[in-house]
Image 1 (cartoon, rainbow, N blue to C red):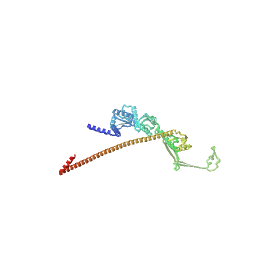
Image 2: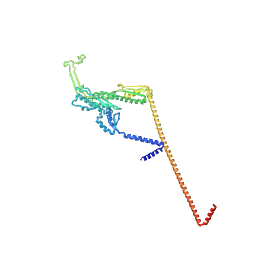
Image 3: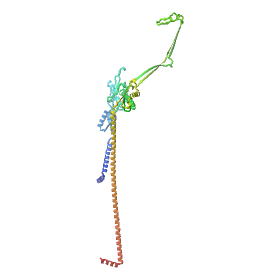
Length: 528
């Protein structure tokens, strides 16, 4: 076995030594890549798969859970700014059961109605009332903490004692402190939801008596403002002013050109709830009267026969008899009609919603260097008045002025933008050049490798051709030697055949003519 390994190692070493430099470099790079890949795969396999143990934890609960995990030796990771704890997936349920046995996580410091479980027969009335108020505060804080974006909440209730007379009863008030999660803010709808939630949960508490603030000290809802108060009112005013300014700025940009005007709108909005009741009375001529009466009086006779004074009553109150002719008959008639007609009654009740416009104040500044702004103050004033519905009767004002604009910041911003674009173009060009150089280097390396391989291939082909030619020459040489050997053998055989034939002929001649042969031999001997 050892000898086989040594032979295999020797063979491998000889093969490696026979490699070229490029082949050795390629083999080293490939081996390194395989080693790195193997290490990464091993680390990936060895790294446990983490799953959430708890999420949306408070800072206090997260600290307690982490302390217990450190004591237990369970690996963990923190995400979501420490609000989510991850542990290996195969230990999630086991760890949860272990932590639950120790009362973790506790949820929050507010126990809620669980405080009432600790009461007994010896509990005083003051402690009972205090525990009940604390229980309501804890339950409200826990409920508010369930809103998206809220990390923690603290609720304080001020519940005055009940009085006999309602007019002497002090109102119940509440204050809420909210701590939002990192990067989260509460919208106006969420603040109003908290106000209504707290007001609806406490007996005798109205939304106007709830104050809400955040952890930074900003008041989100002021007591007494009710719905749409505090920051919400300011937000509505800002939104209305921004809307009006945007519309007016868009119109002026079309008229004067972009950047040649600036608009500022200040609005005074009325957030009071106003109810107006109007009663009107009117006649209905087509409706018959409810009741009608007629009286007629008639008198005829001689007033002298009655022995009384007749005549016309004068200015002094005495009877003036100058206008009365003696013996003339007197006649008197009187007729009166009384009718009770029906009177129509109209009652109109109007309730004005909060948010009405009390007054608008608009300021417009034009760049006097703009060609379209020369002499356009009057026309721009008319346009602004018509566009925003300016009413001078309610105190609206419009001021349009033309003055030179300071373009320093715009020019600086434009130069910086051009410099940034130039730097971006240079970076893009450098990126292209770098990519081109890399591609060229890769192509050059590939071409060198291809050329080297082609040269090696040509050398192998040439070497193979030389070997083949040498083998062919050797084969031809061997074939020629074989042919020569065959020829020599054939010649030798022919010589032997001729010698044998000659010998046979001589033998035949000796046998047939022995005397002549003897005489010929003696002659040859004499000559020698």
